[in-house]
Length: 129
Image (cartoon, rainbow, N blue to C red; front, side):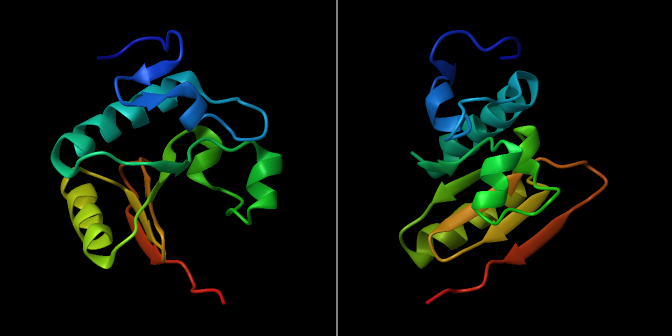
């Protein structure tokens, strides 16, 4: 499934409103379609997923403390909500198996991105509070 985003859904399980910037509603259509198609494949194995953050405009990225070169700015990243350690580990393992290039592990989210194939990184977000 490759093409242009039409209507409210980008792919069968990921909507434009879920993936667009939360403050301005923008996203990069080509990159977001690529990301959502990847997430659909991951969802087939993992099960339903809730996206906490998809695309971010530069202003929102600064407000949430995102990296200056965040893949969210290019619609190539999504933060998936997780509730239990077992869910987090399963999701990370599957994401790596399915070709995630960037993986960030937090207390309640797992970040996946599809950055340049020449680069592969993994990190852990600091625990706050």
